[in-house]
Amino acid sequence: MCIALILLVPLIAMQFTTQVHWSVLDFIVAGTLLLIGGLILELILKKVAKKQNRTVLVLILIISLLLIWAELAIGLFGSPFAGN
Image 1 (cartoon, rainbow, N blue to C red):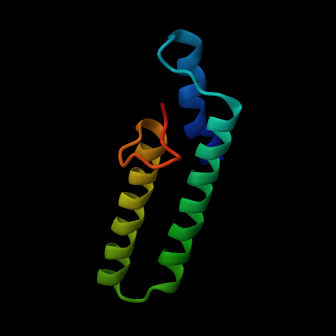
Image 2: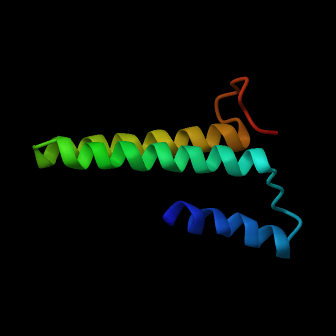
Image 3: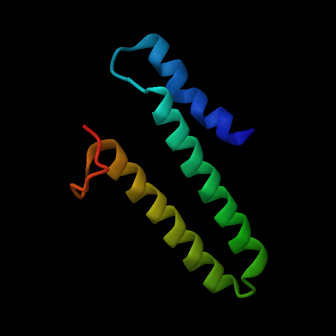
């Protein structure tokens, strides 16, 4: 449910501005990225006992997801998966 609400933001933005151009594939990739991130977050919160280790792993997860998102959107690192 939360993933759908998050994905509503670009969908609504596409209705009011020409600066947001998402295709169906963009929504699928973003939804998959959010779903995998959420599942890994649940795994970390349930399985890691020490709070300090849990905090570090959650921060690594968030930074990783943001870097992947930025690479897919604007090509931060210039990989073959980079956006236009």
